[in-house]
Image 1: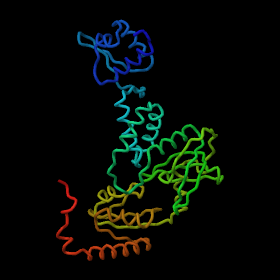
Image 2: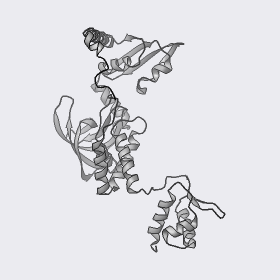
Image 3: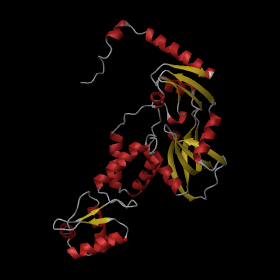
Image 4: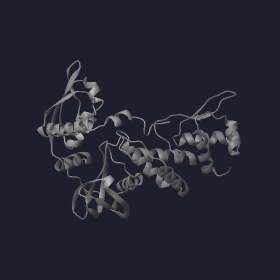
Length: 336
């Protein structure tokens, strides 16, 4: 192999396998002399790749962790596996890694050959994740198109369905994608409305990057997350929540969304949560019930009223269960 750049790429691909390579084996694989391998190793080191050498009869070369992430060379199977995994992660709001997953997926899908892109789409269509059901599922392609437009400062066109079902077409200057842990939102300047807007990504359809570049505008708050919180606050009523739990603070905190804050201990087996929420009454009531312990709502009154109505409905539903239904419980739909 006389093409030095191609040979270096092949050498780097071999070294990214987690093993130590004897110089003679590398020379045989690349059809060059051991001296050429030594020179190529020096070239990789000059480019910043941390290649470690061990001496002796069974010594060799291996790529070790350095100060920066080197470009990865993936074979077809590895590329498909990573793309499928990133799509699965990006399609749901996974707290802590969601934005990085979308950025990585956008970069990977940009360079995937068409044959591999079809394989990824086929695998994605043939599988269905088991989710908690407390967040909207997003088409990974929608996220990657939006993320690419944000990164490339490219105008975006898409269909949008509002909360009341109204369908509109929008052309925007995308600013940032924001994840709340349950949903994805796009913060963008709406050219038709001549103002900033937040869009729920699960209501976006057929996003298309127009190719027209734009100079990013200055966001009113200077931070996309803050702007989105203020925007949501205008749409949802502000609830001052005060709840006591008959369980330790750690137990309760592990079963509530982090954005609600941490409950304060009031005893060895009790705690109290005072927080501000812009969630709906229905969502808040469900989250409190899922903590799975006794609790008392001190406020707001809207929440206590809703819990009373919900409790009455659940009691009526349980009372309507017939003896036959109780006896047959667990027989249908069981696993074999």
